[in-house]
Length: 325
Length: 262
Image (cartoon, rainbow over all chains, first blue to last red; front, side, top):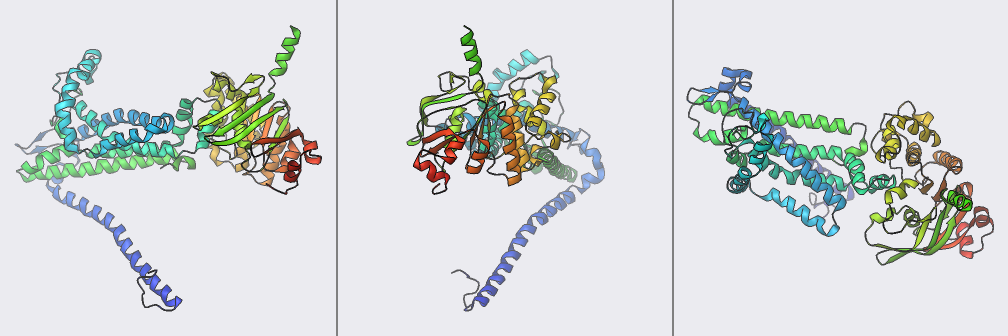
C-alpha cells in the first residue's frame, strides 16, 4: 500500500529502490507536463505567424497603424481594432476597479460577519454567467436603460467634451465598457478580498492604536499592505477584458472606426476575429484575421509583462507587501 | 479655584485608575473585578502566567479589544480621571493620548520616515513643515536616530527586529501621548536588543506613564516602579516592585515569582 511501484520488495533497501524508481517516473511525467505548456505556446505562435504570412509580407508593421478594413478591395489595417480593444478594457477597469475595491474593503473590514459570505458569494456568482447571456441582457436591458438615463445625462451635462458627442445609437464603446466592467468585477473583487483577508491583524491594530478610524486603518494600512496583490487582481481582470468576445461583439456595434465619442460604435480584435472568420472569402482576409489574432496575443503578453514589472516595482523592498500575492 | 486648577493639571499627567473592571469574550470571563491605580510618570509592570488576562487588560485601556466581536465589560478604567468606557467617547482622541507598542514589531511596509510620521500626518497634529523635526525628535527619543538618520527613506521592513521595535516606539511617541502601553515589547528580541529597549523604557518614564506587560520577571524587576500580579483574571497583588519581588504578601505571588508555577 505504501510503495505501490515495488510490491515484491521485501527488504527496506529494495523498497527504497522501488520508491526511487517511482520518483523518477513521477518526475519524468511532471517534467513532460511542465514542458508541454511552452511547447504548446510555441506551436500557437508558429501557427499564427504561418497563417498570417500573406498579410505580414504585404503590410509589415504598417498593419498596426492603418485604419482601412475593406474585404472587397482586400485592404486591411488593424488600428481601429487595437484601439477598440484597449479602450473598452480601459473603460471596464475604470468602472470595475473602484467598485471591486470598495466591495472587497467593505466585506473584509466593515460588513457584519453574518452578511460577509452572502455578499461575496453573490458577487462571485456573476463570474458564472455565460458571456452570451451578458450579451443578451446587454441588448435587451442594459442598452435601453443606458440610452434613456446615463447616456442622455452624460450628453446633457458633459456634452461639451468630445467623448460625449454625436448621436446615441445604444450599441457603443461605452456600452461594451460597462458590460465588461460587470463581467470582470467578480474576478477583481474576489482576489482583492482574499489578499485583504490575509493582511495581518497587527497592521490594522497598529493603525488604530495610532488614532486611525476603521476607515483610515483600512485605507492607510490594510490596502497599502496588500497593494501588490491588488495590482495582480486588476491585471487578472484586464486579461479577461482584453480577450472577452461574445458580450462585447453584441454591444459594441462592430464598426472598423476610431471615434473620439464613447457613444459611437467600435470594434475589438477578439470580436472581429469571431465575426469575420467564417465569412472570410479571400486568402488575404483570412491572413489579416490571423495577423489580428497574433497582435491580440502580443498585446496580452505585453500587458501582462508590464503588469509583472509593476508588481515587482510596487513590492520591491517590501517583502511583506508581496506576501499577499 | 486654584486648587481645582492644580488638581486638573495633576490629572493630565496620565494616571490610570481601574475601578472594578471585568471583561469577557462571549461566555469566557477574562478579567474579574480588577481595581488598582497606576501612578503617572512611572513604569507599571503587569506580570502573571499565560492566559491570566494581562494582555486583555492592557488592550482594554486603549479599547483595542473593541475590534473583537461579542465582548462585554463591567466597571471602568479612567485615564487622567476621564472614563474610557463612557458612551460616546472619542476613541481617536483616547488612542492619541494612549500609545501602544505590540508584542511583535509591526512597522507598516512604508519608509522609516513615513512610519514615524503616520500618526501626526493622519491626525494633523503638526504642520507639514514641522514634520521632519517631529520625526527626528521621536527617533532620538527612541534611541534610533543615529542608526537610521542616513536612510530615512528606506523601507522600515529592512531594519533588524530590535530596530523595528524601537521604530514602533518612536511611531507611538510621535502622537505625543501621555501613556505608553507595551505588550511584551521584548519577547521577540535578542538579549542585546532587549537591553536597549529596557534602557529606553527607563529613560522614557520621565515623560510618560508606562504600562508594560511582561513574561520576564527580571525585566519587570529591572524597569518597573510598581508591579501588579495577575492570575486567572484577578489582580492578586499590587505594590512597589521591590516589595512584590522581595516580600510578597500573597502566597500565589511568591510561588509565581520564585518559579514554582506559571
